[in-house]
Length: 109
Image 1 (cartoon, rainbow, N blue to C red):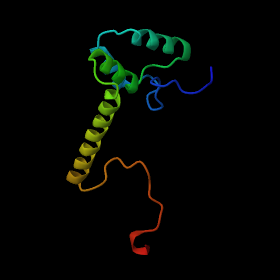
Image 2: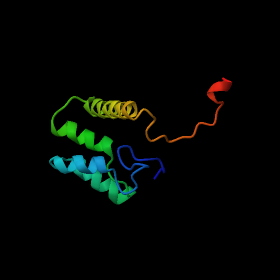
Image 3: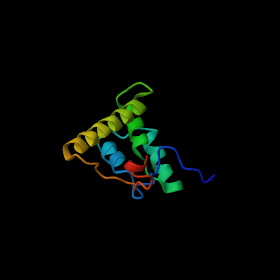
Image 4: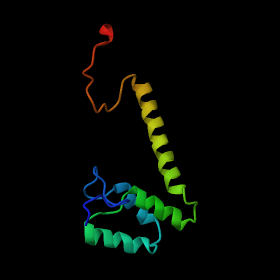
């Protein structure tokens, strides 16, 4: 009702639902209250679970420590950054730049 984002649901890059969450949740047993919460979030806010929700469900299913979802997310992000860096080293150029530099050229600094 407040119009604020619902934590662990929705994702600005994945309007049709977070594919990472969908894939992970398929592998887990249906847990309560997680399943009921996901159903209510979709019914009332139109939002689907994102990776934060899925990692919390994973941690619950496997009785992991409370900080496990954050640690798993950070670990996955680090692996991705390392893979990206290795790709750039092999290609000897930046990969997937998302911005265009408009500052001074190297010779004018």
